[in-house]
Image (cartoon, rainbow, N blue to C red; front, side, top):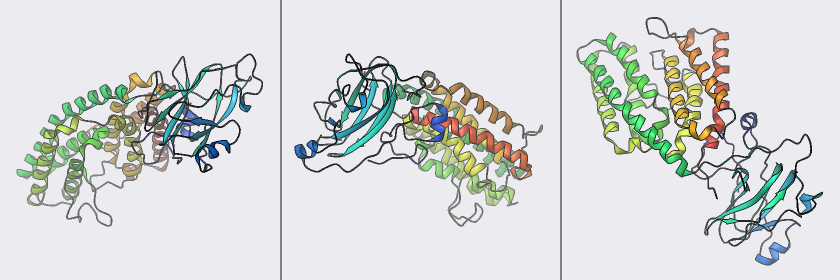
Length: 421
């Protein structure tokens, strides 16, 4: 079993809750859990008997014996386990991997999740529990879920910092959200089609001043669809790809789409040289609009993208890495923030009861948007990124960094997980 940072590239498999990270701790999400997988003794019953006292065995028929009277419950009385800090030791006696959760029976909140405990392996997780009725729930890979015995826990010692719990978000919770977001994306594509056609018409009649204006309009429309990129596949490469390593947008012969057109427009290339690329862009956007997969947003992508859109804006736009000559990175950041806001909006129903810092996150998003839009001139043009003073750059960096920190738990909270009601 492997620990992973919540901010690294993630697979579609469930994540280990409670991995310590500053941003998640600051947001008040499940913290204080350190998972320390260790090699287990080999060999069935002999192996199990050699495990440390108090180790809870996870099998297809039981999810650990009652843990209310183990060594971690010193001070318990009348069948009530002591509240406060507690460390669980698990041993997987199944024939396949197992995931185990510690659940509050009444609220269904999960306080600890240990994912991917291999056959014959051990894992350790620590929590600080308050008063309540708890149970372990096991999800074997090769069998139905199993709930362990209910354990009544007393109040924690005064001043103890309790581990926050959270009600898991399931795939079923996310399906209507993903559907609504997909419909929103579909509703925006006709406007994008019209915009790239206008760009193509500008180039066809040789009006490159109009082409620059309409290029930006279309590009920003596309950049606002950030949470949908996972569903766009090769369409995204054709529409908004960036140059290969060691090449520029102007010199990369394989590059098409917005950035190739940008490089040609702002380098003074003639309309005849631009025309094949604007025509290809119209075809690429039409192909995207016709693809039935564009509204099939993977449910996990919405929460993940709400964070990643801003993270990518910092990495690629705020550094100017994607500037192919238009110097409109600040405009792109503004569009990205709009895309993040839409992704966050459709998740509000799920987040309201699960994320204590949701209001602060929305306020930070609005503040960052206001800050960025302050660099749009009265005529609709944008201040070039390189024209910002050092203090302006620092202010912008700090605002977006704080926003990314607040959005990171959204991806974690809305990752679909198993849940036993």
